[in-house]
Length: 81
Image 1 (cartoon, helix red, strand yellow):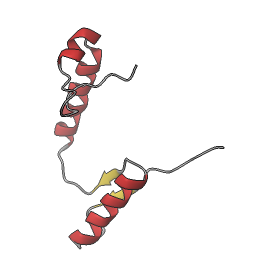
Image 2 (cartoon, rainbow, N blue to C red):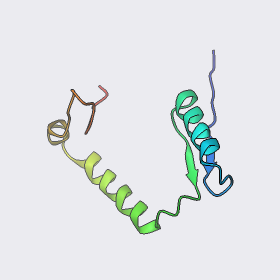
Image 3 (cartoon, rainbow, N blue to C red):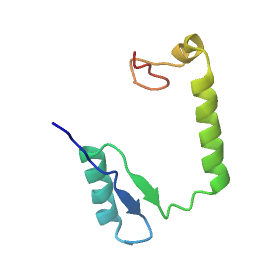
Image 4 (cartoon, rainbow, N blue to C red):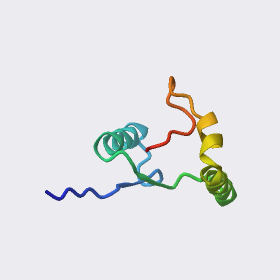
């Protein structure tokens, strides 16, 4: 059986009604688990900094990444082995 879902795109500028946008976000999170977000006004340099920090994190040796893990709160690095 093949299962396919597309990742929804939610544009914050398309609908000024915050309740409807919140419902779209909830639906995307509950059904797909991901979404593309447009119209957010986050500056490109901030997005670039986050991407660079992510690349640096994943480039660390596994032992260093494991030290960043908190299994109680499920925060930090979580290895899928």
